Amino acid sequence: QIDQYNISEKELDLLQQQLCIINQQLKEKDTKIGELSTANKSLKKEKRNLGKFNEELKVLLNEEREQHLQIQKAIEQQAAYLSATNANLQTQRKELEDLLEQREYGITMLNEQIRIQQQAHTQWLTQMTGGELQLQELDFQRTDAHQMSSAQGSNL
Image (cartoon, rainbow, N blue to C red):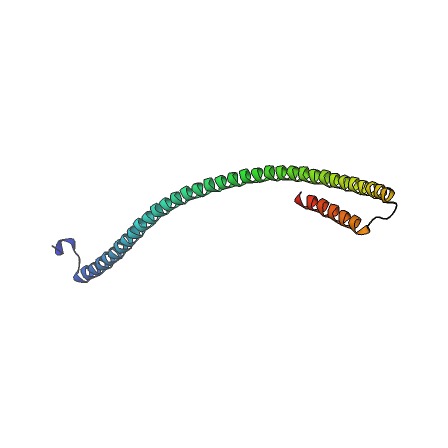
């Protein structure tokens, strides 16, 4: 059959070598195509996995954002509550300071009245005894009155 194409054996050998080279190149290309196909499948799988991971991250981010907003709202509510409580406490403090000032003034007035009464009493006793009053009794009364007024002040 070779003779009907007028191909010599040398030419046939040459054609067979070229055919072997072409077959080898085709095998190499098929191998590369297989490798590229495997790499492509691997990349597609990795892309799907990254897409899933990206979606999971979005969900987590939204959950974190929502949690952060809830915490921020709670902090703002707590700050408003503490601010109102602080204002109330300052008002109460001012009222207590005013009350204390009024009581201190009242005690001062009572002490003054006691002093005046003691002076009047001393003058009266001096007039009644003709100046011969025992000073120890007066000192005792003054000390007793002072202790009573101090005790009242510390109870407030």
